[in-house]
Image 1: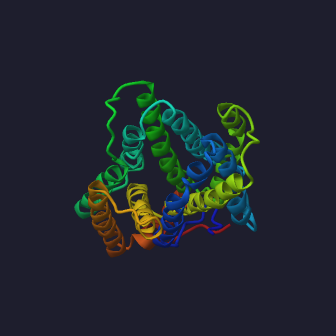
Image 2: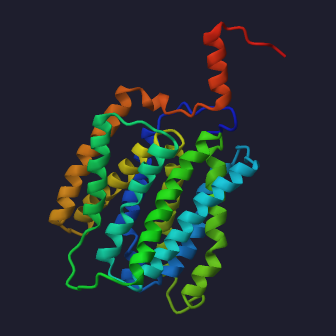
Image 3: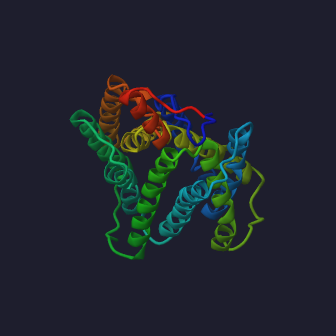
Amino acid sequence: MSTSGPGVTRQTGWIPYAALLVLFWGVWGAFSSQPTSRYGYPDGMVYVIWAFTMLIPAFFALRGTTFDRRGIAARYGLVVGLTGAGGQLLLFKALTMGPAYIIFPIVALSPAITVLMALFALRERLSRLTAVGVVLALVAIVLFSVSSGDSDASTGPYLLLAALVCVAWGVQAFYMRKAATVGVNDATTFGWMTVSGLVLVPVALVMSGGLPTQFPWEAPALTAGTQVLNAVGALFLVMAMSRGRASVVAPVTNAMAPVLTIVLSLIVYRTLPSGFQTAGILLALVGSSVMVYTSEKRGEDAGAAVELPQDVAARQRSTDGGSTPVG
């Protein structure tokens, strides 16, 4: 865990944290549907339990770390938290109104929102080879979400909800990176994410029609076991975003996690990937490999560190003559 705060740059590379994110979210993806498929556990309760599991990684993240009490840290943290948790609630609502095979490909485009915002707002630069990798990863993400369906439903209010989820999650990832550029440490951002998720618990309960009591204890226990993987993965996402370019980290992590999910599903459930998923696996592997290779080649594993204004000024003074006033 980085304990960096205002005026401290990140020197650790993003790749190890992205790999841990892929591991946790990949395993979570393979088993996340079990509470619903086995016990019919409502999605709203899945959200509630997920919100409380966020407390576990938050405890370890905040232990021994100074919580950033600046107003800008709170603003960015709340934006990150509310867009993430709010998007999750909107997704649950959309899935009750429309087919998943239409909704998920729309939501899957959220990394494209992050990439565009990073390129224009943060002025991140991509080499041609990296840009090719980003495009391949984005296409792979959509392919993972595409599934066949015999319904001709193509219009409805759920399309607007799906688009809002896409934008919300794209904005969330961008502001994770934005918070890092102003020196907000990872623990603070994740702390605000946890608070935001808990704040929306009453909304989820209302959407679920209250607290259900007819389910066996195995249903919430299994939900907690799977959702803690989701929560820990979210922490690694914050850590990866604070160290790497948002325009690279978002496509890589969102493309590679489904690859692990599909592999585990093949092993555990003996479920063969569809043609779309097979193509997605290939594109994800190629695109992510290209981006990781170019990041390593350009030294972004260390160079992706946040260079704050005071660091820039110090570097400029040293290059202008090295006469820095003391005191």
